[in-house]
Length: 418
Image 1: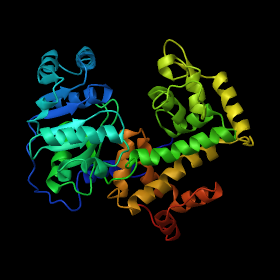
Image 2: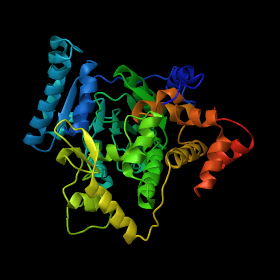
Image 3: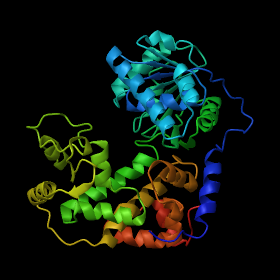
Image 4: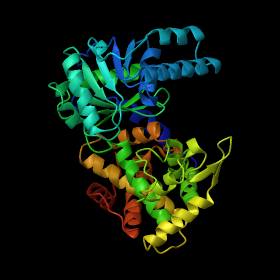
């Protein structure tokens, strides 16, 4: 980690304020009242989302499909509040009052009078379309319908209703009751007063909101996918996965891509058939190496969750590299860092050029508040401008990686991202 880049702190503060403004929506736009919220799904995300509103004094009706899932979700929320009280972060009376604003139910019709409904169900377009079709028939006219999708097309979700103007994305980050970022995804039909209402509400519940247009993965996950592609490629070419993680740790990230995979769970999205092994990840899952939840993934974990790079995983990677015919070589930390970070900058430039993000500083705000990008740099786009966009372009070209047209133009003109 280095000393802060000159101007980074001021940039972060200014960027955060700017992110709350939307270029084509007047500041005096009349906001819709949000006095009652509905949440669909009482799992990790749904429960975390719900807590934000309960803590802010807004009643929530939470809906689940089974009593067991509902009871489990409510118990987790209560336990989270109790832990917050124990740590001295909240008074017991306030925690009790927050839980008192919660109405758990199995009845979808209980959402009829909600002013805002947020779905936090399985990340499947078919499932989400079905949920929004049901909501459209039940929820009162004028209510806002939001999806917590991480990747999916908000326009397609909105099209499953007769009121696409009322639909947008509210992408919370896990744990949703703690993480500050809220990507607010603006559909092509989303009404201006709907977007303005959600942006203001986000601040009320303690979030840092950033507007994103519709694309696969929005701002944050779209850029993250480019980093993950390179992380996976690097370990097939001879880089040790622990060295890949360490390169990001030394840069100032709280964790690297393989630590993050272990934390999230390698089994997320796995087909659960141990006989069907088509990827390294599936090979790890077939061995029960699901990450921290099983005590072994890319790393082995002790009872205190302290990690040690796994020799089993190293052996598996070597097998998969040999099977793919990948020649192995020593890869130094400088190349690892360039290949992890520079493609993200190029993708950020594409996001700007496509109008998915209003401004470069919005991308910085996303990464600083949702993905642990180190604050000393001011965010990815500010950092790239500091080291020189020509440096980024040269690095991408050296490694045979694509360069976004906007990035190439700015680098050639000696410009920075503003």
